[in-house]
Amino acid sequence: EMQLVQSGAEVKKPGESLKISCKGSGYSFTNYWIGWVRQMPGKGLEWMGIIYPGDSNTKYNPSFQGQVTISADKSITTAFLQWSSLKASDTAMYHCTIALNGDFWFDPWGQGTLVTVSS
Amino acid sequence: QSALTQPASVSGSPGQSITISCTGTSSDIGGYNYVSWYQQHPGKAPKLMIYDVTNRPSGVSNRFSGSKSGNTASLTISGLQAEDEGDYYCSSYTSRTTYVFGTGTKVTVL
View 1 (cartoon, each protein chain N blue to C red):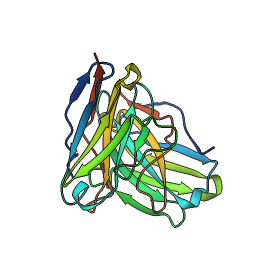
View 2 (view 1 turned 30 degrees about the vertical axis):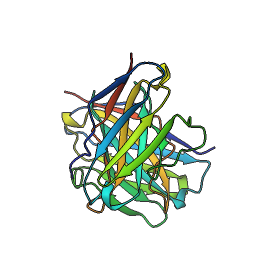
View 3 (view 1 turned 90 degrees about the vertical axis):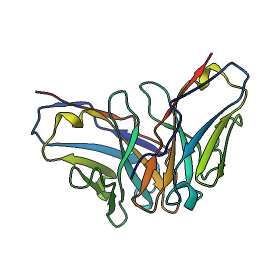
View 4 (view 1 turned 120 degrees about the vertical axis):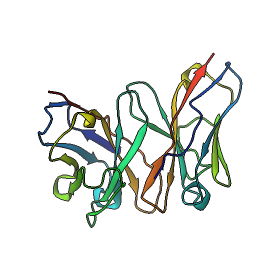
């Protein structure tokens, strides 16, 4: 069974750094794109970017370019989403999801990681 | 890249059919047959309902169907049931960035 398990909820202060994770299992990790999606409280879904662990090819949506870093470690079949300096506006649920290379739809999805940034 | 445009809400009575529209541009919906639809219940992860405009994943009810005309894609739910309540999002591959979501539609079963 293909599964994505995300790291637990985080509470951080503005200016702090953070790295959340998404561990894949039950599929060939290097043959699937991993996408990260933001959902701010009470709002819709937003694509942040995607990474192909096979060659680390990473594409960011313009709104998130320079704001976050997406990475992946093939050895532990885990993708990461990282901030160097959090802002209150980063408070959101973050989902990871996967798409087979050559496909353009994403399934399954991780359970989500809630990030709360508050002073 | 602006979000694709969806109606904020759609409602229907049990057994009725409803259609949710998703309007984009020639750079996304109009340019590719890579539209997918996701259902999200409160506090849950999104669930894939339709992919590549018209295809239904295994396990998704055949009451759900998708179509596209020009720059607008549509999701139709027939035989509306209480369990269909939730938020629905379209998504399209786009030549400008990677992917773009729709603004989301809240479906209410009256």
